[in-house]
Image 1 (cartoon, rainbow, N blue to C red):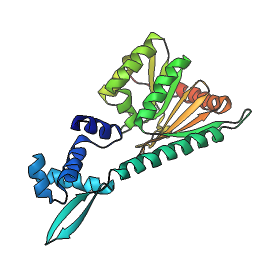
Image 2: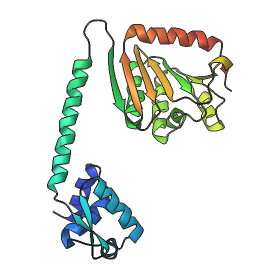
Image 3: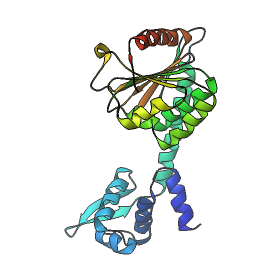
Image 4: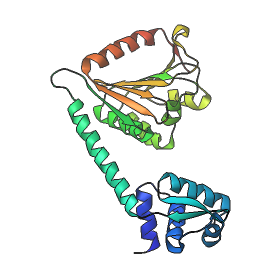
Length: 251
């Protein structure tokens, strides 16, 4: 097996190549100072030290003082395997919880998703429903505005327009020119909320489409609460339609 295969394997489980290079160097040469690692890997000493700190946080390296110098030693690769096993076990528990969280009958199905990639996946999945999409809670500094203008999302808009799916956007404050360009897209309408509904800053965005409500919390990490229920979704859309009629067009 070549170093390139090792680098790719580690990268696949979230360990960047720079960290893997430093880790492999310590495995080959044993106890070393940051300066020694820097010389062997031809990396800047400050970068090596930052990388060693991150490896320590992952419990892949430990450090100690020897003759007044800080030295580092790579820990067993078994720790990586055990860590990935724990992640897989946690994932299985999460999947089991999601299944049991669903209630029978007409009760709402509620679960949470983490990360921007999950939110992008939600938006793309809405295209399959071919229903009107509402997004409420777009503020001046809201991350959702950046997401909607993301390069990856351009394909979302192209496909949405191709399928003639309406997108209705509510803004808390007047958006900048880049965001205003969204209103120029086909099958897209944007409105500025009435003053009594405006907020300087919001950490929540609500997306409603075809019997489902998605509430995104703009914290670190980003979380999206998913509620799959026709009655709850209808309550939201009825309210949005009322507010829509009292909101101002964004041109």
